[in-house]
Amino acid sequence: MVKRLSLGEENCPVARALDVIGDWWSLLIIRDIFDGLHRFGEIQENLGVAKGVLAARLRNLSERGVLETAPASDGTAYSEYVLTKKGRGLFLVIVALRQWGEAYLYERGEKHSLLVETATNRKVAALQLMSSDGRELTCDKTSVQKLAK
Amino acid sequence: MVKRLSLGEENCPVARALDVIGDWWSLLIIRDIFDGLHRFGEIQENLGVAKGVLAARLRNLSERGVLETAPASDGTAYSEYVLTKKGRGLFLVIVALRQWGEAYLYERGEKHSLLVETATNRKVAALQLMSSDGRELTCDKTSVQKLAK
DNA sequence: CAGTATCCCCCCTGATACTG
DNA sequence: CAGTATCAGGGGGGATACTG
Image (cartoon, rainbow over all chains, first blue to last red; front, side, top):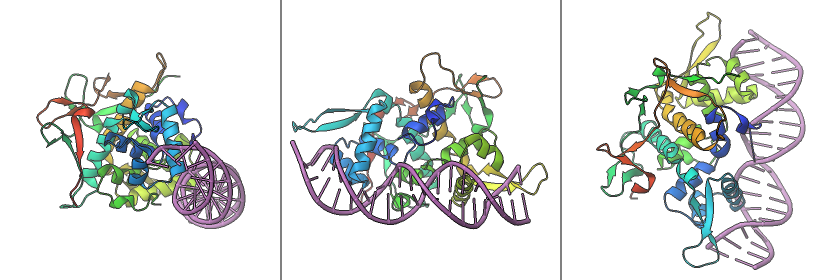
């Protein structure tokens, strides 16, 4: 299940994050759960992924603490998949992907789904990077401080 | 090269974004370029990826407009890989991954590299989601408005 | 050094059938 | 419906050799 040779031991948080959710399906599954799909069949139908693959991904994400199973709310014997706090922490990753996609992957006039504040029905604001004291930053104003061995 | 059956035609920006950079290596390559690695060999050595795979990824990302090649600054005949504006737009995705990794994938006391504002050497602030009028939002206050057919 | 070309293997993936 | 088991194929991925 681990793809790149123990990337999980990297000291780069980006690499370590990708080791958990950087495969072909995980982020789409997590997106679906954010969007309110909690049943195996719902997710499977929505993504069109093979059942075996979906089961494996759900198991992996569960083992990694990203999601957990809960008794079905409809009283059936099956379980529902819900995000843990750790899993909900991925929301910003998905939002960032969404906003990048909206900005660069659609033609003018082409429509896409929209992330809105539920209460007001208004589009959420663009994420932005800030300094520790609240000034807006761009990528060229930052650098990665490597870890001393 | 396209994995999931024409996911690029999806009307979900998240899916479309993942269709471009959702494979095993692309985001790590882009991270490396952000971190100042611009030469084929540097990236190849740093990631430990097979040369053929790296070449294919670079080509793909170039065709997709995420990066482009420029003449080498050292006067050799080779090229350097630099991000386009579109590619630089992925910075927030990488920052979001980084911050999630930092928050959930390290033991207490375990060290990792750090994203800092270059001028002040201070850690950048945590990304946060805001409403269109500047209130802080959490994932449960939002929903995805599906596109009408 | 910067790639390209080739080979081969593994595993991911999808399809189907099966169980509870 | 919610998964598990099994099977076959296809391609991604690594290693190596080769070229400029």
